[in-house]
Length: 105
Image (cartoon, rainbow, N blue to C red; front, top):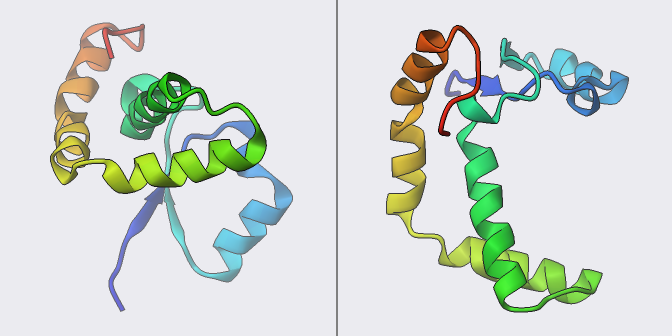
């Protein structure tokens, strides 16, 4: 079985009792991560991109929104995912340089 560390920010909704119990019961190691830190979390940028694509296609009700979200997710190029992940060292450097302050990311 592959070993991995699960990354999520420490936002309160991610630290609920149910979520915490799930991770503990399944021996999932969590990476410590600052709460509310899109500077360090590439998925925030991915959600932004998906949101923009869905808005362009005018999907407003829950059913069409979810269908469009799934469709757009499937259309994401692997190169975008790699770019977002590979940008992490630069993100970390910028946050360190700014002593934890905001960055362009």
